[in-house]
Length: 404
Ligand code: SF4
Image 1 (spheres, rainbow, N blue to C red):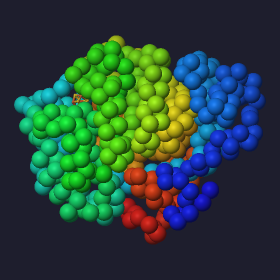
Image 2 (image 1 turned 90 degrees about the vertical axis):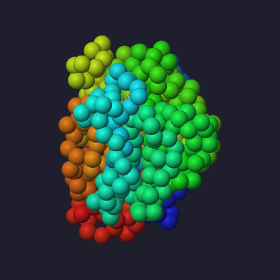
Image 3 (image 1 turned 30 degrees about the vertical axis):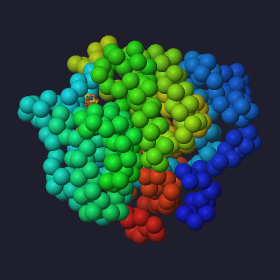
Image 4 (image 1 turned 45 degrees about the vertical axis):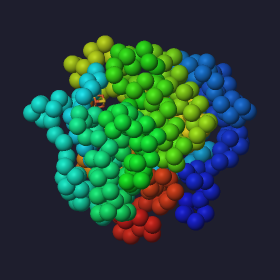
């Protein structure tokens, strides 16, 4: 597969003809001897989609390596040996939040000793140090009790003026809902104004599990499942690409996870605006959600593999190493994931919840991590329209600046 910018065939990378490529791949006996896996493979080739009941059956496959192999075949049929990453920076605007989701270790009340809110100058200062080496800033935060849309318009305009080359990926669906209410605007008006001021895309955070009875127990007061989907739909309609996520390993059932995946792919059928799906497990700290059924490494990898198989119309599946760690992330890159977090630089939400993933990984560390899986590291921009094959000890890039 040619990855040069000029000849890359599909706007989000990957081979649109992947079902045909899958159909001519040799089938390992561990898959041909397993009726569930064979049915999943044939469903993707012949019907293009794995139905919810079959998706649920994949959770009962005991030969987990065969499941990972099948997910990896699908990933290979779409992206060959390529693994995507970008050079980005996370800047969290505030940890003050009017809600108190039960799984959240990040939020603070406004009078808490560790509560903070970045001024626009502080926000710009955070970016400045990294500005020559990144092309994306990823900014989410709590639901601030005072800030309205004008604050974010000023923030994005200032960032775009100072760093015009940096893509702004910002605000989860619940932040957009909160802003629209605080500003007496519809969601559509809110998104349009934010887009006009410099917002380029929206991350997928806050989906948790798109089943309202679960949401009511783990994040009461947050947007409903329908609101999450509708906010993303509005964004897609306005030409704002988004990602989508799943927080698993709290109190949801396997059926709830299947419902979640099915809702995402139904919306994607309508809008085609999701770029990447990011599944991540709840990280425990023994005080929040003590009833959570925590995900083991095997369970994390199974979830990633099933996401690749079920989400036939969402191109990219991310190994979110900030949450699952570099070691499991490497295995995920052989179990269906084609994308991995970028250099990140700074991250608070998962680290507040107990993540120990290093934040000082250099570009070279990340490339090495990918190479150790026997695959090719491809640097991408946020919207998967520019690609550059990266090697360890690269000193010069043809399309995007490198972190050195
Ligand atoms: S998850 Fe988001 S909305 Fe919920 S408490 Fe944390 S910061 Fe607030």
